Amino acid sequence: MIRAYLLLITKPGVESRIASKLINIKEVKDIEVVYGDYDIVIKVEFPNMDELSAFIKKLRAIKNIKNTSTMIAMQ
Image 1 (cartoon, rainbow, N blue to C red):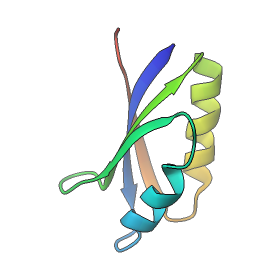
Image 2: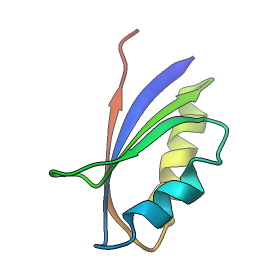
Image 3: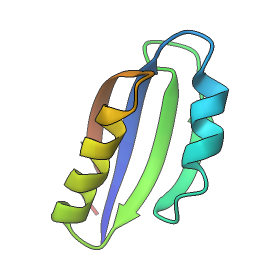
């Protein structure tokens, strides 16, 4: 199982709306709207890197998401 943390930068004012849509995805284990350099932190779990990569590509295609950063957990 691949566990990762995705850090998102969104357009101002849409953070909660994006988070409320993403929380319904079964691989999303936790999601927080945060203050700081990033706007949303998502904890995800996927069975393999290919599925994680596909999910990240879908995130990057969402109009109001400006940037993503991914941290893959070591264990």
